[in-house]
Image (cartoon, rainbow, N blue to C red; front, side, top):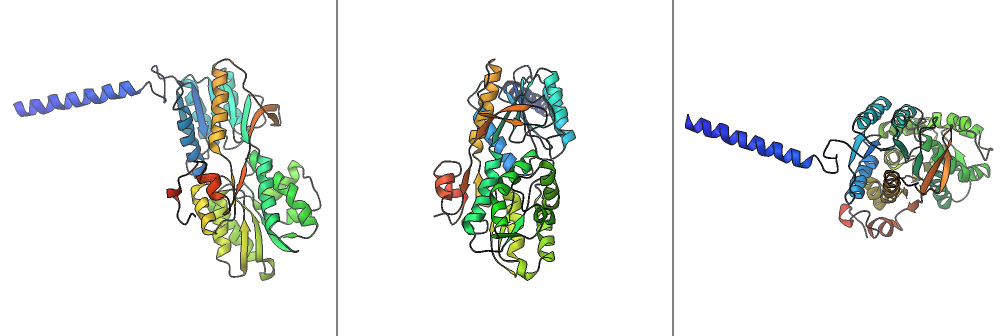
Length: 373
């Protein structure tokens, strides 16, 4: 009996210690002592390495500040995104940093935040169709697409090179900006015969137009969208290769919108015996794609230093919390207003400069890769 009483007392002591530990940790970066949060961050999904990478960088950037933060993921659902924002509003956030899953659909979440007096920073992707967006922190998305297109041009020689186009999601404003940038440099080379578009009748029909309207881009993207989904990219590439003749293959050039889709598309093209070689673009400098670049499976990636983007957004949020006006470098039209923006530069990375750009800069550790010279 005494033994059982001792066990009960020991159990009670352990429970009390656990509760005390939880109580002591409730005032850390994940929330203030009263459960409130200063900065709420909502990211699109935890299923893509890019956004997990951003989460890590946000935590690192906020480690040395006195502000509390909570980071939530919307898992590719606009409804979940709005739920996340509403949850953060109940915790008293003063600044919302949100990367929308769907730019138009996210307007409702931004408006809910604005109605509570919360300042809204659109992160990486622009929230569209509302005046409830206060600031936009982004990479120069048009420059990203232009860098991808220029890389293909620099690697091409002669005439009639097969060109396969792919794009991001039609619900993502960035997908249009990436494509706009790529088209701006590729179109003259399509017009002069350097490239021949093989997988989009809409793009072929518009190949003589240097500047496309939003509706015209939408028609092309509707045919070549990957929806940022690896499997959809793979299936689309397989479909295009099945429909293409041997003459449409050989040494091919592929505009892939980001690293995840680039790997799927590259793997698919690599299995086609009629494809002699391919040059394929990407962006985000995901670890898996850096290994692909080292191994010669992916040609390039556009490195968008998330550390800088995160720092810009945190600096902007802190300025707002201090009652100051954040610094900006330009503005973007979100179909309702010109949103003040801070832009971050991008870098083209391939085998030649991968070590200097990503290892020597401290972005990644050399030990995370094999075959790196």
